[in-house]
Length: 151
Image (cartoon, rainbow, N blue to C red; front, side):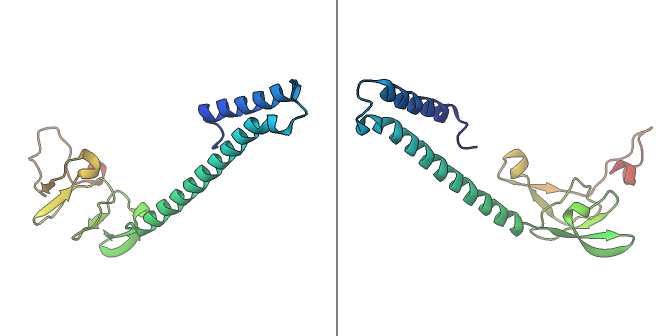
C-alpha cells in the first residue's frame, strides 16, 4: 500500500531507468554506475517501511483509544434497568444518562434536570447546549410524540 503513491511510482521508474541506462551504456562494467538507481530503490523501500510501521503504530493507538471509550450504557428495558453494550440499544429503550456519559444514539429526553450537552463533535461549537424534556404541543393530524414509532 505504501508503494502506490504517484511520487513513489515516479521514483521507482527513475530508479529502473537509471539501472537500465547504466546497464546498456559504455560504463556498464563499472559497479559505481549503478549507485544512483540502487540508492533510489533503498530510499523508497526504507520510506515505505517507515510509513508502514508508523501506520501500524497509529492503528494500535486508535484501537487502544476505542477500548477506552464507553462500551456499555444503562437502559430501562421492559421495566427493568439493565447494563447493555451500546450497539444493542434499540428503539423503545429508555437510556439512563449520568454526568459525563456519552449519548449512544439519537434520543428524546423524557425527564431532565439541568442537562447540558457538548455538541462540539457535531457542530464545532465549544459551548455546552442546554437541553430540556419539554415536548411541544401536538398539532392537529400529528402523531403522538412519545410512541416507539416516533422515536
